[in-house]
Amino acid sequence: MASSKEKPATPPVISHMSFTSFLNSLRDAGTVPTRIDKTLMPKASGSQQSGTMAALRYLGLIDDTGKPKEHFKPLVLADDDARKPTLQQIFQDAYAFLFEDPEFDLRHASAGQMTEKFRSLGISGSTLTKTIAFFLAAAKEYGIPVSPHIKPPPPPKGNGPQKRATKTTEETKVEPEGSKAAPPEDDDQDVERFEIPLPGKRSAKITVPNGLDGDDWVMLQTMLAAYIKRWKGFAPEKREE
Image 1 (cartoon, rainbow, N blue to C red):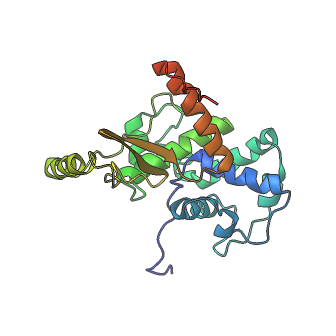
Image 2 (tube, rainbow, N blue to C red):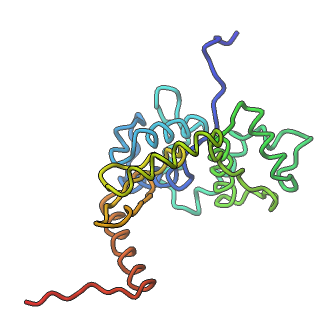
Image 3 (cartoon, helix red, strand yellow):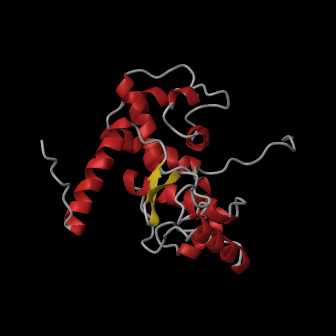
């Protein structure tokens, strides 16, 4: 008999890109450790580390202690094309509730039917959006046929008019000073938000994915500068030597 403390595993809530990036980081290192743990993700946020570990367990790639299953090492070290058939089968096994229900046809289902399937696992709110988005991205990558009508449900906008009104008031007081970050707009744990104070103007709000490394920041800086130059026609002033 199962322990009352045990809870059914929840499908992954991280982005599929983050999941793939972790597999690629192990492949780039050329070896798979005998235990998978958070120390292998030093640049990721705490929530992203936990989300990746949970995803690996849900997909049956590691056990509860972090020990890789037999098929994990060859999967990690394989090239992208060789991975796809294996991952397709892994996802079909892990998401059996979508493939083994005779009353549900993933190829022809509506968005509402898909949402009901995930809700039946006790998932709601922003978690519901993230879990469906992860599966859809994986299905597209691994060639799993999915109905074109299925889209992730929009994340919840808030808990009511009163809370939103209070939040707006707080942001109005904080932004002109530019000294404090505004409250987060939602509970998305896969992003980081910060503000850049501009003298005499409202602060510029920046949102970026969690887990960016040094190269990512360099690329972001380059692309942002090019975008501003192209969109606004601004070019940095040349300094006189």
